[in-house]
Amino acid sequence: MRWYDHYETLGRHIDSLKEMSPGRRDHLVRGIQAIMQRHSPNLLDDSVIDFPLDSARQRWYDKDPYLWLTINGLQQAGPDLLETVALYLEEEATALAAKSA
Image (cartoon, rainbow, N blue to C red):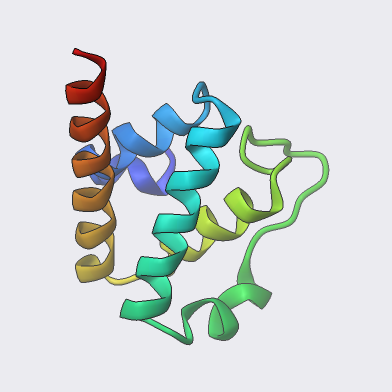
């Protein structure tokens, strides 16, 4: 089981990044990173050394350094930050759906 499977909304949106266009995914990753920076400025600096880097275990997000950093950073985040990111992703998905309608 993946760590983000414990968070329904967040997990669904993280999974959706896999099949998303690179431009849309990059936009969302930049947004997540901005939230992380505002909410927990030292999160990545303090925990990056603990991030898993297993070249034999190629997860779908391991190929993109920014996505890898973001998802592994979120794994170290507290519940408040995870909820904030989940709300951001939900709002972005709703806005995209409204534009497409």
